[in-house]
Image (cartoon, rainbow, N blue to C red; front, side, top):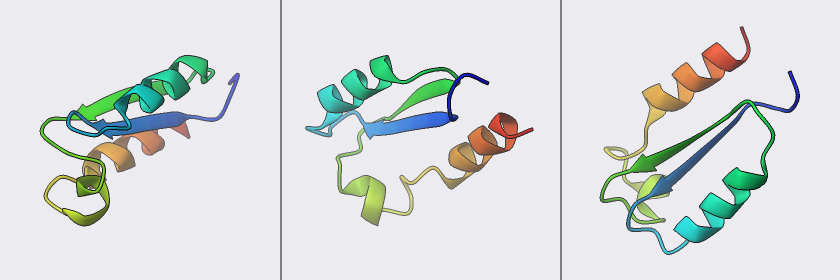
Length: 65
């Protein structure tokens, strides 16, 4: 493994999206970027219907096998 497994999660409505894209480009593999449709930045902290607990768990289970 070259680097630490990284999952970059960003909402499609988040103003920080360009920062997420830039960070993702600079990360070593293994990495994955996931966009949450219709979510803003704070939604991914506060709205439990938009937080992707299963996606996050699956990513790290696969990454550390």
